[in-house]
Length: 340
Image (cartoon, rainbow, N blue to C red; front, top):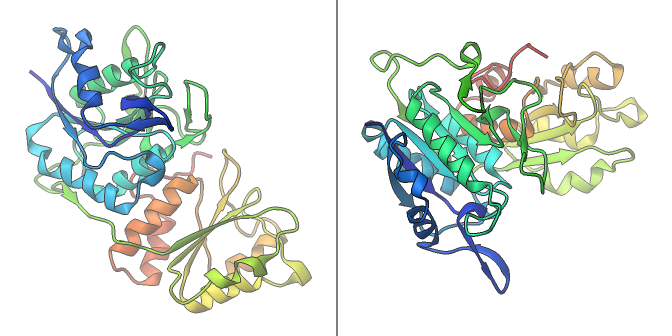
């Protein structure tokens, strides 16, 4: 009999209505799961529920909670065939990306899911998301951190929340889905990462530390001096969401002061794109050539969620700036490639 561990962090799927709106409540999810007869069906795996304390709206998730989730998985790694992490949708893609880097040499499925409508409400999408995620976790076909939502299994560090109110809430514009759930669950096995040999590459949890990373989204007419106060020697990473293939204004044909100052301070500056699809190609246009000369890092086709969490992970390893540059521009967990 296959066995799955469900880790509930909070989020809409287990929330209940209150005077101030939906909020997580201790023990509420367990009651809802007890009422789901499908969970005791013959084809379902055995399961245990671990409820984190405190339960959080995902807007309040921090690196401490990523560490807590990671420890729950690592401490039970040998006892289960797979794991399902129930999480709020707002920052689910960030957590999926973070865990993909933290859970090194992962050989079992870790599936993040949740819902747009609580389980306690009519028309909740949580039931299907939960049941299918459990079946995928029990299958042990996908040794990755994934995100399942709306009949699609996405690589966690390739996903982002693309809709605030649709039941198909997540997209993976730069990488195909790893599986789709119809009458059967159909896996795209050629797209799934290879399972590591535990004798050669044993599973390991690397916890995150508190890091100082800033994100600037460019817009026409942006005044870079507004961001000058955050560019200090304490700023470890700076992510620029640039236009198109990595373009940014160079007023007076000079690199903006905050970028120059950050680089001089030793801050790792990473340039991504605001476009959902495609990749950064620094130097393709004159307005990005100065970034290449200054020594910024190209994010390729990574999502902002993957850029931020990957940078936090590498900073947590205590690596040199040059080592971080090289690893940021290389693929660690399938978060980037040359397909696009």
